[in-house]
Length: 168
Image 1 (cartoon, rainbow, N blue to C red):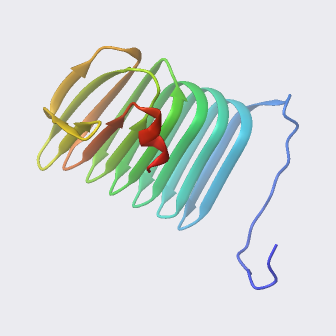
Image 2 (cartoon, rainbow, N blue to C red):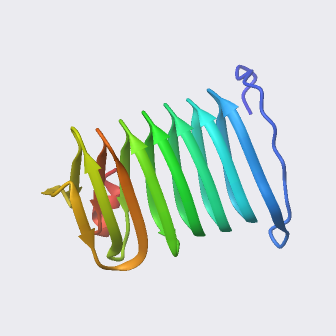
């Protein structure tokens, strides 16, 4: 803790063996960090700022973001519905069964050790790359789990090799 840091904050400590029924977060231009939590349902609605979900266990998540950064690391969320406008998403070591992203003017960076099952349908001034090689804007890749990404004027970057993860 710094005496010079006067940023308002709230810290909640929850026992690791306790699973919450629902977590709801809503806020503008703020930092929200959830670490090592279990919850049946997670709902977030953020504008600007940063949302970090690290080591989260959940059955479902609904994430809405405008003009912010969303990072999901080392988490298992069975079903996700994510929407973003002018947002940046970082996903690393995410386990899920069925998830959908709907984006506009956004960027998604996917870091995975496994081949992901992807259904990407982008339009406009969008790009899709896998390990820095361009792919078509409409791309279907077979692999583990199922992630559907739709939108326009957005970028999707997929990285599979572990050494790539350390570079970003």
